[in-house]
Image 1: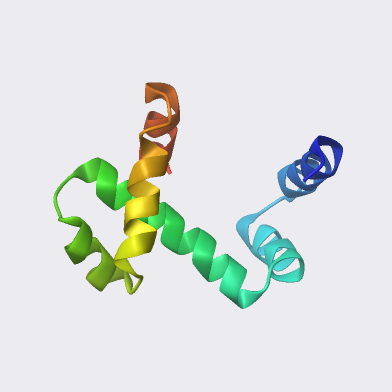
Image 2: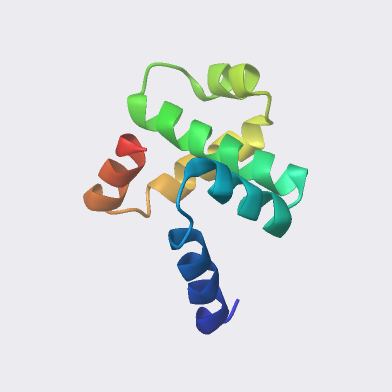
Length: 90
């Protein structure tokens, strides 16, 4: 993805005045499957960070494959402490 295009998306999202308007924009930009995938990814990362469940338990609770949870785990290993803290605050 070209950086300029991505920042146009970020600016559009930032300009929204409330959660409902942001939801509407995301519904236009992303398919239902894409929105669910983003939600699942965040849920996976937050669960992995908390460390309270095994990867299999996370996969079963969220309704995703163990492979997706493993990918999330591997991705988290590439993030800085600041980025992980940002995920925890969401």
